[in-house]
Image 1 (tube, rainbow, N blue to C red):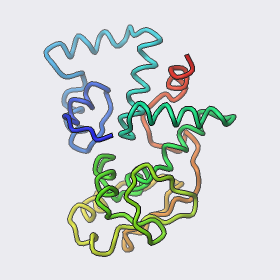
Image 2 (tube, rainbow, N blue to C red):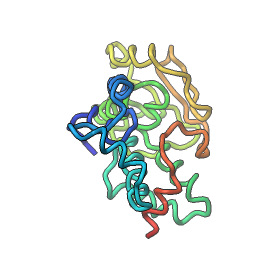
Image 3 (cartoon, one colour):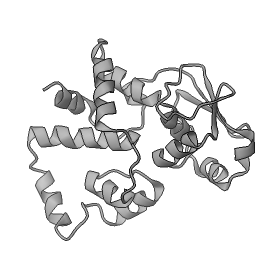
Image 4 (tube, rainbow, N blue to C red):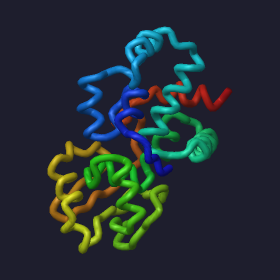
Length: 202
């Protein structure tokens, strides 16, 4: 999904930081945008079960920057397996743009998607320009040699936090390895996944 609106407004509406810049704004104004933002914050405490499910679904979609249709397809795939919570998260985390983000090669999911689409990313030495490409355990994701001189990649690595346990990073080689499919508790995503599953199972 190519979201071109304000990332800060979207972050404040959902209550989660989607970019480093939006995190700073969210710390200053931790309520929805607009003149009635503070009132909306109070109403959130009295949300109906459906509204809660909808909000969590929107949070999950925003953090992976995917369309509603894609989200439904991932839910359908996860529903074929026994453990739906882990299965859904594993499908989303195996996306190439998500691996680029988790590995610290991009500062946001939007940047990760752009780098993949523009051909800066290699998977096992071969160019892959599809953000939804499913990375398999053991595969190595690398920034193309010519692209490593770009400031955006160096800045991302310089400011990156330690990767989650299922990602191994080599800063010097501008590469990350997807070690295994993670469990929900290992994934740094802000969302109540069971509520998302309840939303789609209605």
